[in-house]
Image (cartoon, rainbow, N blue to C red):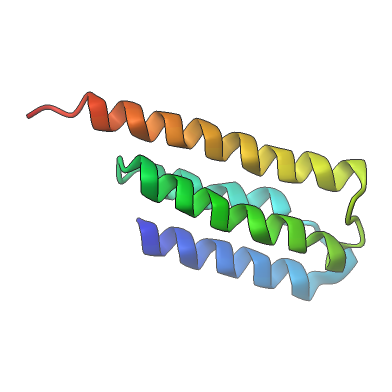
Length: 98
């Protein structure tokens, strides 16, 4: 799951940069922390989310929306989903049967 999340976010960021201003795919970067959440490891989920936030910020330039309210909303959504995914991963870890 960790590697598939990495591959997904790299593909989304690449497509977003290649599409330029015509298509904004920043919102799809939330898939990475969601994929890693399924491992039940809060630390890995946090790292995956942090690595997904970086391209969310950077992709604002080729999309032509850097610093705009729209861009901030996209980045905030990636941050919010990351936070929820980390909490959910922690809950999964705590409630695992022995």
